[in-house]
Length: 304
Image (cartoon, rainbow, N blue to C red):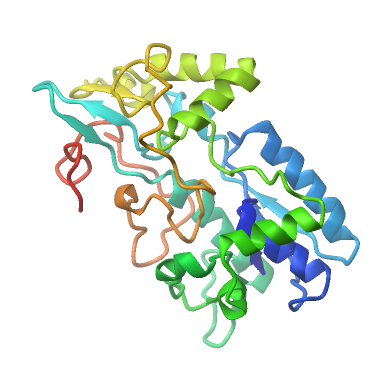
């Protein structure tokens, strides 16, 4: 299997498999949060056509639309790493569970299904899928073993000794110089470059983001509906200002180049580690998902 994040590295792996430079995958899996930029979906369509030539299906899996779920007062969803201004003026950051709930969990569920042991059936010892992950040489510290025995992680780019620049060169030579960054439109980890790009190229998406940013100012609708007022105010932009008022001209902070990768967190300082054992697919998020809890938020500049 290929874990297809749709960024530069995983797109390179798909192209190499199509051309026979590495062993062909039985399938590639893309976890769709429902909130990706339109260029990511266009790139997926292009990859599907390319992979179909050699019989590699791209399987799109999903547990729902992240934005819709976050704004639904009746549906538990997941933490989004929103920036928080606490009542005493300090700044914090909510823990992140969106990657685990909307990417890792549906990928694992699909792989169990393909193996013939969907949850809650137990996967027998010795039955596993080999999962290729697009980690390049400069990210070798992010290469980790799987946390479940029915997955064996492999890293073809490390075996080749390739860097991200090598991947870019191959994609460009094959006519894919414009592989987009895969990250939700409303990801708080965007740098100002990404915010400006959305604002300047996709006015509909920008208007949607402004509405979402205003809607979460005083907590997620689910928490408010339960009568639990949050502590502090919440923002998409790291300045803790409304997105419509935030200064987007400063590029001192730049986001990671490939966005949100399910298996190799490229914003690791803010990632909430997944549970040691695989949870049931229907496990709801905590009821107070948008309240600042000890350990779930930290002051700006602190590290874990």
